Image (cartoon, rainbow, N blue to C red; front, side, top):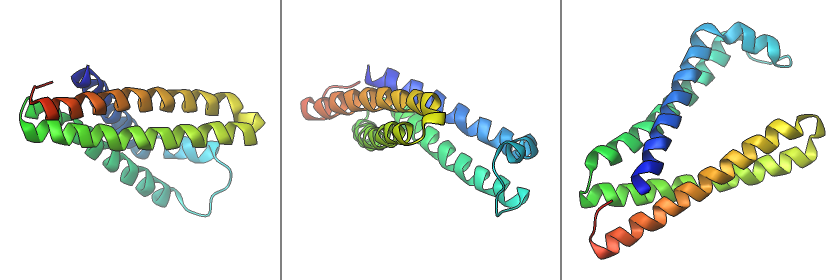
Length: 142
């Protein structure tokens, strides 16, 4: 179960990073037109999107490294830490999404959808973290 969560997470984070790179490469003008007037130019917006995409690539890469580590103790430890951190982060994002949905009725449905997704991520990563931590204590593998 923990490997499945990490595999799904790796695919999700890497695809999101690639989408960000795609937006930065070919969709900046469309994105800029959809946003309210910004105090930064298109190059700065593209740079910010690339920076976020690189962070997403790093998170996806960490998932892949843990998966490639297999049953080694360092991989299980790193997987438990990664899943714990992402569970807490997802829980915080879910809380922010629910609060924002209550504050912005015009955007309530997309924000609620994002909050529900973040809640599911928090639960999945939390279960993976617990399972991996238990495996560390028992000495078994994924």
